[in-house]
Length: 93
Image (cartoon, rainbow, N blue to C red; front, side):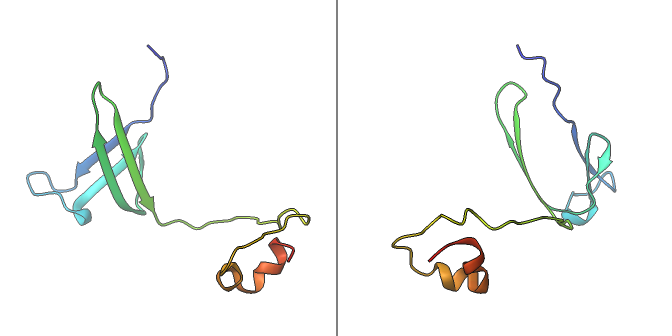
């Protein structure tokens, strides 16, 4: 058996004795409140295994660099309209 320590997820009702809804539910991951959580899905499997899917609202700080300058795309339609003016920065025509 693996000795991997998994994070602990706690889902609690803010008002005990009432029905849990999104507005009165608190979710913690390893003791830290997830206040920007917008969606939580739990799938219970055998032997204490649970799959958790979460969506959160966050600020993202990301650096994007253009792709390989030698890369070419053949027989792809609509990519230019999806990427707009960024198309030329990522791909050679």
